[in-house]
Image 1 (cartoon, one colour):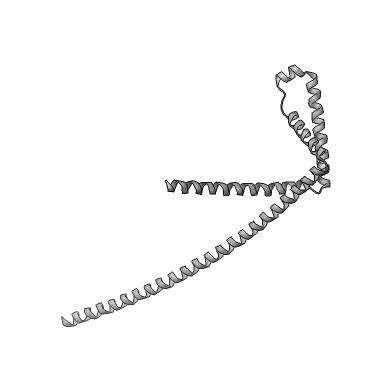
Image 2 (image 1 turned 45 degrees about the vertical axis):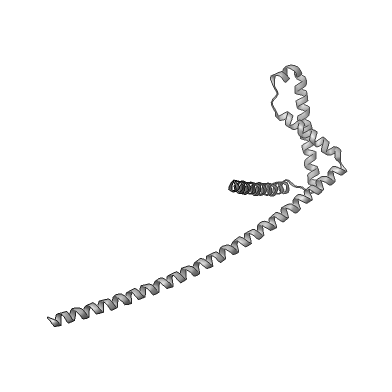
Length: 182
């Protein structure tokens, strides 16, 4: 029986050696995999940081451009107001008349004004149309097109939205800080 025991012992020792070698191979593979995963994560972080920096730079540039455009538009408006203040007063009156012409008349107005109210509304509508045409002509002569005005408005809306968001964030942080002090 000693030869069977000896064979069993040799087979057991061989199995232990193979298991140890397999365990060592798995450990090495795990170390290699961890290192590769760490490298991939670091490369991803670097790309994300670069993309963030690039986006931030573009956003900053767009903000500067929008501010410059808004400043120029403001300067042109002030210049035109100083040169022709009556045009702005007339424009304000025309805008008011346009708004009034768009609002439905009440029964009380119709009773009090009758046909005179219809004439006033018609005159106001015509004045508003003329003011719009003249305003459009004036804006075009200043180089302010409909598309440029839309673009400026879009940029202004974006700036206002960002400012409101930042203000809300600051208010939230201040409230949280105050709550922590209590």
